[in-house]
Length: 191
Image 1 (cartoon, rainbow, N blue to C red):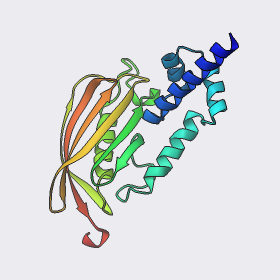
Image 2 (cartoon, rainbow, N blue to C red; image 1 turned 180 degrees about the vertical axis):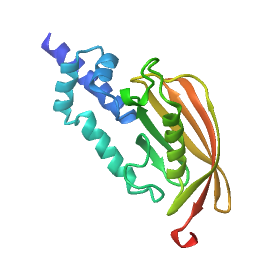
Image 3 (cartoon, rainbow, N blue to C red; image 1 turned 90 degrees about the vertical axis):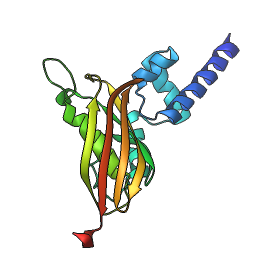
């Protein structure tokens, strides 16, 4: 019986590690749901494996990428960075909190979705200053309190110092925003 339990624990912990490599922003509650165990079991497994709590993981991932961003200052990117390849593509996640939604409907205010997409588009450009020249955005479905919005951005065109960036934002598999941003790169001495 003990051998079976230990084998199950090892397999569960392997799944946990793999899930956290894919998405380091999973909460203990979400991991418990994915693994069909209690939150205390997830916490014990994390301790066994030396995996820090979400707050520490978020800080570690952010520190890894923020040094690469020239166009934004600390704290100016809306959402937490999951992946960033400056000059190519990036992914951020935004957890919807109470102060971000309309009190009556619990629907996320649209400017947060826009800000996440726009700031990610700006972060992709390797320049001192990046200005948004134009944006074409479609809001496709409402986002609610406690949802996690994952924004995917990719540079799809460039002409001189002008870049076209496509951004798609999703909650789970549902697309919630589709945008196309034109941004212009400038250096401080160009201003």
